[in-house]
Image (cartoon, rainbow, N blue to C red):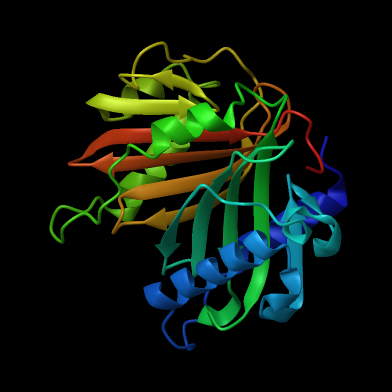
Amino acid sequence: MVHLRHNAALAAILTLTPSASAADCTRDGLLSAAHSYLAAQTAGKPSTLLLSSNFTYQQNNKVSAIASGLLSTAYPIALNRSTADTTACASYTMWISTAGAKPFVVSTQIRHANNDTSSIAMIDTVSATTGDLFFDAKKTLGYIQKEDWTDIPVGKRPSRELLKKVGDGYLDMWTDAKAADSIPWGTECERVEGSQYTNPCGKTLPRGGSKKNNGLRRYVIDEVMGSVDVLCQFDSLGAWPDSHEVRVVDGKVKYVHTVTNMRGVGT
């Protein structure tokens, strides 16, 4: 169970919305900050990051000291990808490390206050490693590195509303028997849950059964990439810190990725 102070911190994340009078939050600024995060992770030096005065670090749904988190250890990164949400002034970065005794697949949302991408207000990470749900970093890497993540052309990009609806619909499948049928599944959709691969995505879906809604949802929505990432607490199965990313191409779900930490806290 997440303590009240953790819920308060998560509420603070969701209120990190841009000010209407502030300068525009740019895609280039968001991706530059994401790249600085990756450089800090590769070096194991969070001190290189430009952090705001009220910065918060959260790992696996628990507010903690950045000095004791993943960022303080250098990890060689075999694959990474970032998306940008200029409306929420936030980015999402996925990275995979297969080397060493402790491989990782990591999902991170970075948030900026007042549309100011020159400093980072929050780093919010869900990490999975050996022992977590369907975990095998090498298999996951093999699947994801084959995917096509080129920009979607203007005029063919899904709306923000559709992307949020798809992200919520996916997480609602465990509590709502009708949620699976509300999602526009593609015929060649690939689903990677940890290292478990399913094609097409619409095969073997949950249809309700749990009374616990998957909560604490935080969104990064990128219309250019046709993607939504939702960090959450997967209460339907066990209060697990979780990331679900969905990509929509030509109005249909193309990719689904999940990163789930079954231990709940720490790394």
